[in-house]
Length: 409
Image (cartoon, rainbow, N blue to C red; front, side, top):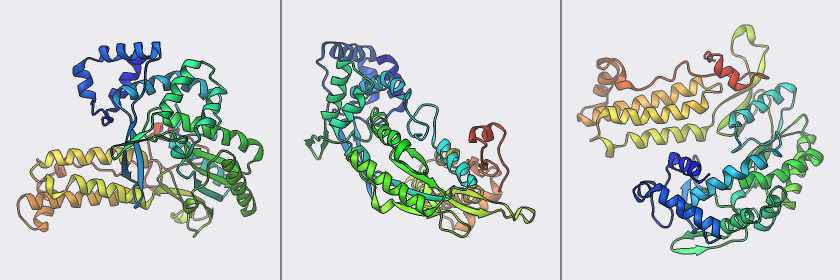
């Protein structure tokens, strides 16, 4: 199990923890030696996880900073092994409303529910998320939730040790009685285990259809009164769990033609009317990349085409930009995103033009001529045109993907 866990950690790469040991150093030291050492420590009970290294990363599209805890490589291996053992046990109980960080489930499965329910007439939406969820989960209640399905004392002792390890920030180790630090391999599973209590309570106390992706959630309802009752129920259940809604992101939205829409899982959702003259009677829930998602893509492209990288070959810069475009488009292609793809591709082309012009100390017009007319394939910059797959009600996105794609909308 440790060998399999190591493969998962190695594949994910990642930064070192407080011991500054990297994946490459572990490979030079000897993977078998490390795994043997961990196996002995876990077997005789002497294993003690190190505190995680606390860093702060910007939240895309906002001025907020997200706390991220980076465990040591050895601790990530142990966490991955614990997840491999425990996840199938908890997965047997998880409910259909939960989509985040679960095997064979994705964000697009959650997004499909919004499409289907809007078509059924549920167009009043409670939009919210749990405030500082990963940092606020009480340890004692989390362990109780784990004990509902796992009785092995060794594994429970190991989980308690992981929760007590704390984080190191600015040279000081800080412990806590709450939180499963975001960034740990096992943290998403523990978050789902605890919020499973919300899912169970919702079956008897909730109103409307709950769609939860880890700590992000929406509830789709038929009327405003129903949405208000759903919000009250959600607030009450979370309060019983020692959690709270993030007030700045909590609101009730009516999906109607000309309405404001909502953002969920990186997409902006809006009730619209079909543009084609013969289909003007058709209204549906469309989605495309949110403003934050668009800005995040522009920021990454600008970073890769920055003046500081002018000494690199243009082909290398284009390869890096293509990697970002493929990853970004791979997620957002399942939507009504064709126009937004055109904007991002045009922005990438503009940045490439500026790179070429600056490298040769020439004006922008010369760069346009060079990239668009003198180089037939624009240095290999990929084209996103024609890659969009439009969502359809009651037609799972995987089937739409396998059927071959869209057609631009």
